[in-house]
Length: 119
Image (cartoon, rainbow, N blue to C red; front, top):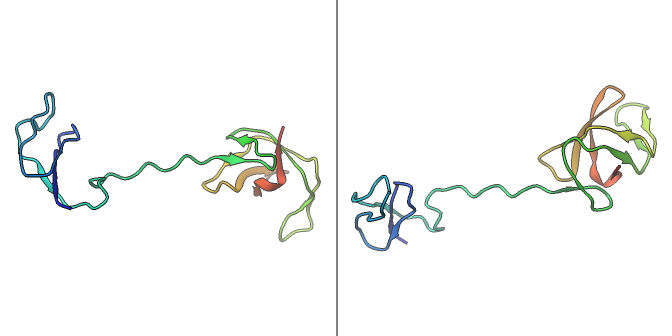
């Protein structure tokens, strides 16, 4: 669908060719530019959805929270097992809502949120 938009920051849209008449617009009294976008976003990117990370009980987690393991977890590739009840301090959220970064015994590891409970 062809329409015309103002690039002056006022957000003006017209169905037919014309000029921007918005008071205070940087492009006031200038021709609007043709836009063929089908989604009506005019090249603007949608804001990324806010990531909500929850522990095994559904409590929302945030950076810096302390959590406790609710299950014995073996560390892949080693004989180390982190026991249930181990306190993990100062977690960091990742781009994945099911995982958090942390440090345990000096090792940087990723834990699944389904095995954590907020303290």
